[in-house]
Amino acid sequence: MLTALSIGNPRHGDDVIVKLVTDPGFADSAGGYFTAKTAKPLQCPEIGRGEAIQRALWEATAELVHDIRRPHNA
Image (cartoon, rainbow, N blue to C red; front, side, top):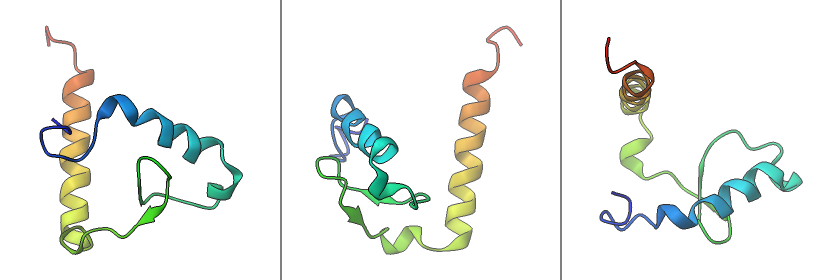
């Protein structure tokens, strides 16, 4: 899906996650967008800056995670 949207290759996403978690330079970071190769901070696209859209994304993500964790027999 990410590759199809030209967002990036999910197989290469672990490098930036490890860097963000282990590099002391990111100790005070609490969320955000970062480049996949260098972990350079990126500005959130304007469409995603509004509180309403952020809340909607949070709620949709929570529902997806809940559905994934729900037993298939339930």
